[in-house]
Length: 114
Image (cartoon, rainbow, N blue to C red; front, side):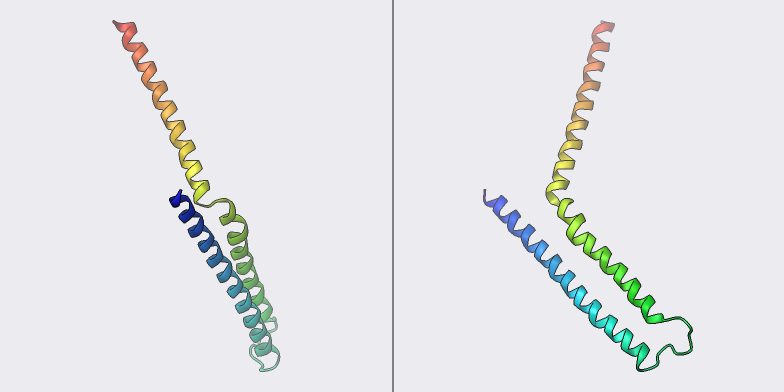
C-alpha cells in the first residue's frame, strides 16, 4: 500500500513540475514576444527587410509553446506510467498466450507421431 501512495505522490510531483515549467514557458513567451515586437518597431531591428521578422519569430515560438502544451495536458496525461504498465501487461499476456498455443501445437504433433 505504501508503494502505491509513493507512486501517486511521485506522479503528482512530476505533473506539478511539468505544469510549472509550462507556465514559465508561457511567461517567457509573453515577455520574449513583447521584446521582439519592441525591438522591431521602436529600435529599428530588421528595418532592411520587407517582412515583419518579429511576427515570424513569435509565430514559431507560439507553435513550439502549443506543442509543449499538448505534451503536458494531453499526451502525458493519458500516456503515463500506468498506461505503460497496462500496455506492457497486455503485450506480455498476448505473448504468453501465443507461446502456450505453440507449445500445445508442438505437444499435439509429438503425440501424433508416437
